Length: 74
Image (cartoon, rainbow, N blue to C red; front, side, top):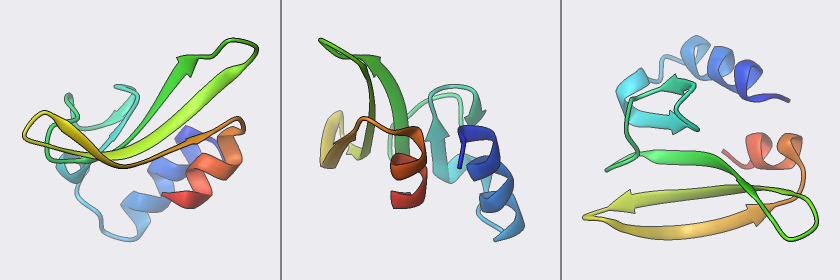
């Protein structure tokens, strides 16, 4: 699953776009008070990070090296 496919699936499930943040490409314009998935450059590979951000702090953070795994987790 890709970010785009995840976005489509969330829309099909009726999840409002202001409830999630997908690396600024889909969903809300910011990640505050949202379920989020961001892409970061790791030491050796790309990392996909999922978390819920509340009052400026990230909670329930998990990192993945595979886009599909991160999207499935969301």
